[in-house]
Image 1 (tube, rainbow, N blue to C red):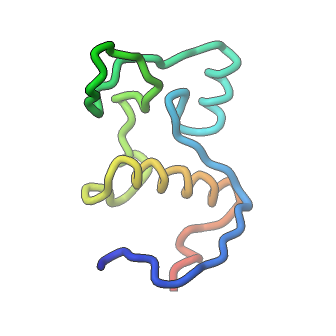
Image 2 (image 1 turned 135 degrees about the vertical axis):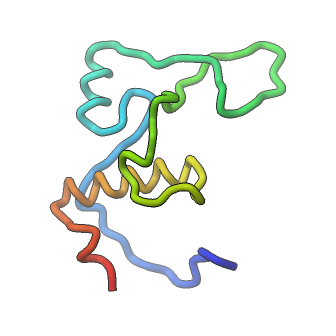
Length: 102
């Protein structure tokens, strides 16, 4: 199976990154959180069987991972968001992603 993890790899977190409903990086998230900004909306990226439509916090539609990733057309939104956060964490830690390639 392509992409299957076949061995355990130890990972140390030395930086931080985040993409969520408040922003696309730590600075945006913190600024919006302390400004009491809420991006509450009705879901448009998934469907639900609930009779009552409940609002959710979701990544804004304006988020475009191509601004962060060189290649993303084959990745799920979850994978794209994860990779953006990983690249942010690497940058925060002062690590060049190209240095990690064999």
